[in-house]
Image (tube, rainbow, N blue to C red):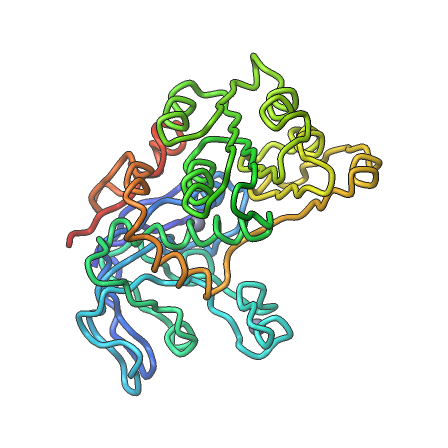
Length: 344
Ligand SMILES: [Zn+2]
Ligand SMILES: [Zn+2]
C-alpha cells in the first residue's frame, strides 16, 4: 500500500509499505480521510517526538475492511473514526475513566502507525477498548475525520466550565481557535471575542460568527475583552496559539474567578513570567487541556451531523500520492486545515 512515512525531522515521503493483515483482535481500516494536525507539523519541525519510520495521521476516518479473529465490536463495511490513544486499561487514570491520561499510553501516528495510508492496522488494544467508534449514518467521513481535534476542543471547553451565555475570549483564529468558536456557539456561549494577527483568518472568524475579532498588533486584547464584557473580563480565555508571551494577557483578560485554559502546545523550553498576584487576587483558575476522553469523542460524533460549518475548516485537500503537500501548505501557513483524501 501507499503511505506517508515520517523518517526524521524535515524528512517525510510517500512510500510503498506492506499491506497490513489483521492478527487476533486487530482490525484493518481502509482509510477515507486523514487531516493534518498542528502536532504533526511540530513533529516535522523536530519540536515533538515521533518514532522514525512511523506513518503519521491520528485525525482519521475510514471503512472497516477486515477484522481479525475474535473481533465482535465492528464488522466489515462499518464507517469508523479512531480515538488514537492506546491505553493500558489498568493504571490509575484508566481505572478512573481517563484513558487519555494513561501512564503507559502510546498514540497512533506517533509511536505506532497512524492513518496517512491506504490502510490502518488498528491494534487489538484500540479495538478492545472501543476506540474504533462507529460514525452515525449519513455523516460524511471527511467531516468525521475531524472528530479527534473537535473532541480536544470539547475537552478544552469543559475545562473552561462554559455554560449558557458564557463569554469566551480565544487567542488565535487558526483551525483550532475557529473550532473553539464553532463548538462554543453550538454549546450556547454568549459573547465570543477572538484575537488573530492574520487578516484572512480574522475575516473567517467574523464570518463564522465571532462577536469581535481584533488584530493584537493594533488593539489591546485585554482592553477589547474588558470593553465587550462591561469591564468584567471574559468568563473563560482560551490560548489556542503556541505563544508563551500571551499567558500574561490571558490572565488579565479573564474575569475574577474566571478560567484560563492553555490549549495550544508551546515550543519546548518556553518560559513565561507572570504576576502570581493576578491569579491570587482574582482567584483565576489557570489550567491546560490536552486530548480528550472517549466519552467526548462520542459526544462529538453525535454533534457533528449538526455542525456543517466544520467543513469550512478544511481548506486544502490532497490525494495520498500528494500527501507531502498537505504538510507544505501548513508549513506555509496557507489556509486552515489540510486533509488527505483517499477516496469514498
Ligand atoms: Zn490532532
Ligand atoms: Zn493506563
